[in-house]
Image 1: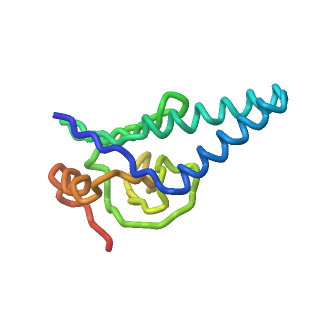
Image 2: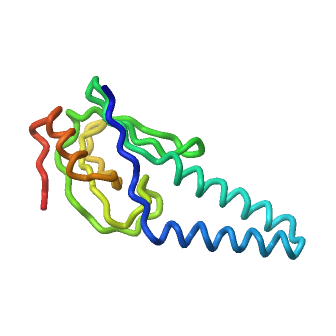
Length: 140
């Protein structure tokens, strides 16, 4: 049975949604149509990420990193994972909605790739990955 882990949502993401919503209301109130439409698109994008960012470990040994309908999800084999370590990062392009993240290092296309995610219940997430690939190194 597939195991799904939702993302942790950091305080900064709630502030981002709040400020974007205030700006949307302001531009709408001031009849600035172009900026209101831009802010509406941004708020929809932020809410979509909030609702749909999750990490799925499948029965066939795959890790799916899903970030909503507007951002392409990607999948990797758990056997490709070399190490996992806890990091604090402000990289906004990572599929994580928190500054406290897990950095997964894996082999892909003959090169080492790193991706940062923020699953809820990190210990259970790591345990599930280790049950599939016992060679994963956990860096403290």
